[in-house]
Amino acid sequence: MSLRDEKGGSEDGAEVIIHERPTGWRGVYYSPLTQVVMLGFVCFMGPGLFNAVNGLGGGGQLDPTTSANSNVAVYAAFAVVGFFAGSINNTLGSKLTLQLGTFGYCLYIGSYLALNIHPHAGAFVIAAGAVLGVCAGLLWAAQGSLMLAYPTEPQKGTYIAIFWAIFNLGGVVGAAVSLGTNFHNTAGNVSNSTYIGFIVLTAIGICIPSLLMADPSKVVRSDGVRVTVPLHPSWKTQLWGLWLTLKTDPMIILLFPMFFVSNWFYTWQFNDYNGALFDIRTRGLNNLLYWTSQIFGSIGISFMLDSKLPRRTRAFGGWTILMVMIFITHIWAYFYQIQYVRPGPSDIDLHDKRYIGRAFLYVFFGLLDSMWQTTAYWLMGAISNDAGKLAIMVGFYKSMQSAGAAGVFRADAVKTPFMTMLITTWVLLVAGLIFALPMIHLRVKNHTDIADETLVRMDSKGQIRDVEQVKNEETVAKATV
Image (cartoon, rainbow, N blue to C red; front, side, top):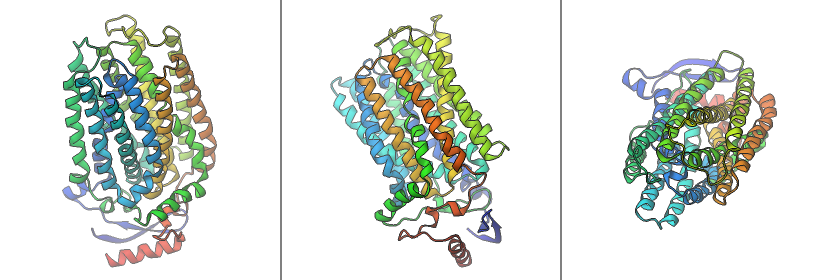
């Protein structure tokens, strides 16, 4: 890829080398947007279908206990691996990490097929969940690193929304397939054909990173700046980088409560609301509505996050929208929750007159979920543009998220009262936003400078180079290409 003899500058005075972007079909392929779309389809085939299965409540099984325990294994393993997954990604490279991360989803869904065929295969489902937790930690670290490194600062909300829309199409398609194949199903659990279809799709997703996606080092952003590819130093240096991220950006800790609760609400929504109130075909329809609404939620919040307002104003605007949505949905949910207790009637059908209001609540929960996740990613992207640092921050995000999910799925498995589950979810969501507020005020700037990018200035020995040294090294690299 050739380079033009052009230079730009940042607000801190550092010189930025502008690269010439390829044209024609090659330009389309190496476009950051194209790569984000492909990334979305990787997650469409993996996590999207995982969401479709779990959105049915109990993984589509009549008894949700095995599914709840499997998800404890998923998120417990995810929490441990996720904390270090950013360093693994920086060592192995994003494409390989992404490839390794896709395998667990196929195994996980296959375990439910095994459970349908052999009712005593619960241990296999739980073991498959643990394997998925390891794989998911790798996948999401690579995904977050790439999704936040490809766009320019004004594009981050839009790129996150595009990714989130494609990713959630996996849930939409999966829910539509499940609804179609189970519309006349009265057995109470999902049919074998549904699981087989999902297994085929997740297997296709395994092939996308290696066969279709470009090497991130060959991608140039729309502003002409080459995507920052993480260094691949020793594990010791990578672990030092993890510590350095916390040391140089301690404000990230204030986002940990927001990270912790970002999957907490799924348990009440999927198992204690959708799974407890509705019959199997209505659960399938609700699932379709939920994941469809996610597409509109992520796109809708992106208009705020990528508007022409100052970035700090957009950050506070996103925070306010989330807080309002929390109270709308949970006050609404409270008035339904006081009407039933565990295990729930599981008898509301789509033709029941009680259905419409409860379906709209589920749509609003889908909107809130996508807005929450999009804003969390956007806030991390507002802190840094460095792919290595972003991988570590996304690792923190997924680790904390998974620790919370493991805890709440276990609480559900031991039959915690539904009202306790709802109130806990409500309180933790509000607390997550309150803790995030000081970080937004103190750390979100209207522009991110290279002086803020600690890891992009770290050499293979863990030494932090100053801005002038990085600028000189980029100039030498330009002259040798």
